[in-house]
Length: 284
Image (cartoon, rainbow, N blue to C red):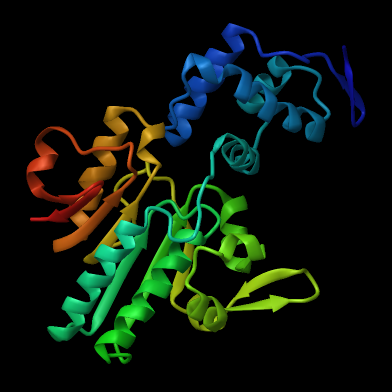
């Protein structure tokens, strides 16, 4: 059944044909390194159908032709936005933040005056804001609030980065945050019904778009900790190896590297790390 879409009709109401799917996923891989398995054809079809409506195109083949012959960079950004999967939460995998808290406490008590943390796939911002809360907690415990602490939060999705920068979340979303810190760092915005992150936390974070497949990255380091969680599962081994090479370049000796619970470091690169817990590593 055709669906009314802007000035035209969408002819493709089911999954795209194999040829179009293979061409699209090859182009997506070349552009951002995301590997789409055969099982993702229905998902990709559903997400691209919105682009058909927005562009008044009638078929997936028309969209493919548009990408090849007419699309500007803005459309590639839109495509990456719809392909990217963004699942996150405050204090997700809490043992990572417990380890970071201990490490920051040790570093500042030893006299370190500068902290640099990188959230490599910041999604909608819960991870970098959690990092900011944990750093503030550690500095308060150590009594060293004069430390220069900054967080770099990057993501490939401009849509997610815009949510990060606004820093507003539903009340339900901030429940994993301890009550005292919830009250300290969030305030209800009555005009939106959302919880607004405090300026104190927002000042600690710089948000920037970064495609993890485009190495080398512009940052120079050294980083004290890098969180690259639940993103490498979307890449093949070649792209994962490129990312970890960059982590090794940027992360200081003794620095922390946190990955997702379903991810791992393999091959010769593993020798550069000491595993300190579930999905947690320290740079040798």
